Length: 221
Length: 115
Image (cartoon, rainbow over all chains, first blue to last red; front, side):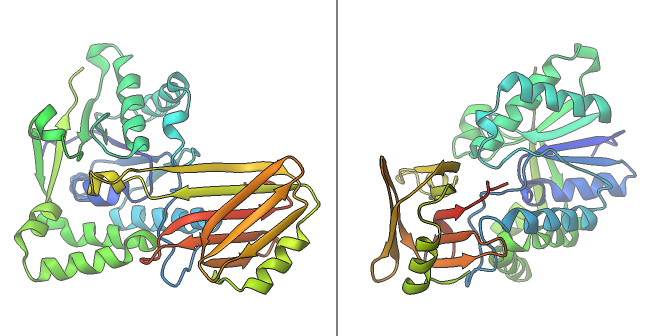
């Protein structure tokens, strides 16, 4: 993996960072690269409330904020920014204003690499809208000032349309931290994380491949 | 939240009748439903802080429950309610959780705007 000067991760929901990129974040931090995580919402509209329920629509954002802080701590992220948007409404924001807002963060952080979602291939409307705003903001920079943008894609049609990921990071050496980050989002991942650990213990090839390899598509402007 | 108790919830609905209240109403099947099952038709609706006055409300059914609020110029209703809570600020939170514990529907009534 290439050594970066500063990595900026921009995702809309607490836990987006955990599933797809927490291994890569850990590797960058181990490399001595500072990582900033800008998280647009607090996942206010999450559906997992526990069974029996331990959260409700109004307490969920408070719980998820704490979980996000815990996950950042596990990963060693020192600069965590919560941007104050609301879950499931990102795509309805004014696109220019949103791109400008993210552009401000990009300007402040001045990263050499941005990690976000691939617009159009990231399933959740908030993911697509976030990726679209980030790429729009970066596009407005002069070509020689643009950071690299690595996108996460996972829609069912993504490989058909944008081909194979051009970057695959082997994160097996930091898998324990990745699992810990996923587990930090307890309200959303309680069941899943337990199953995941069990599958890894049993060395199930499909689960190992999914956890140990993080895939990115370099965005071409 | 606790499993809904018909009489208790009805009392709370009566308590909030005939005054200006803020409503949160939501139905959802999750943003990933069609990703995991392409034959699934994903739908949902959401309104937060609709300000209204209802004259009369009813909590009914055998569980999961239905709730309807009658206004002098219209209606609000939700079905599939399984749980309720009156939180520390006196807001009535009603929610329906599916068989795996995921929220599917919510109707909440508050005398002050939801933040």
